[in-house]
Image (tube, rainbow, N blue to C red; front, side):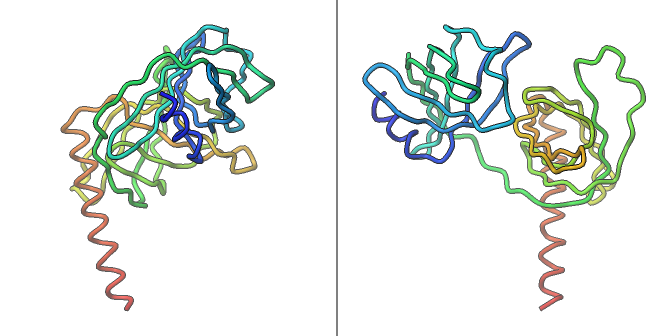
Length: 218
């Protein structure tokens, strides 16, 4: 456990899952000072109000190392200010690393809605530039969102005969773009294998198209 904490402390970022009264949230942070029984965690800004956390809840930190994913379970001892936590390590888990998906920039027709809204109403389909992979996407929105929210989404993919891929994504990162806009990153957490295959085929087709365009430019 000490060796893993030392490894995490040398990394610029670790992933963190924290429980809140409204459900688990997925965050990013930096492991700080480590002593014999506890360690510090600095959460990156604009993610969570630490007042929502109660001492004794369990956080899970994760990182990749030597082709494996390591999960460190730790109890929240104390919230220090607005972005620091004091944690007590409990146990370590080791899991095989999930396969990687390459990312592409592409223009698609996108529709999103809040999953927990009882009456979602009519949602607008927008032609939008996004960054896409088989396990997530990144795009700009004007509606206010929060880390951990679940969004239903529908992607119309022009390079695979206009197929529509549907799924549910969790907000894992938000970046303020100014003038009320946010760049949102979603991790696909609920998606059928057939729907994911549509996205992967689209990414491959779009990658081939972009490579051909680069060759022509040369």
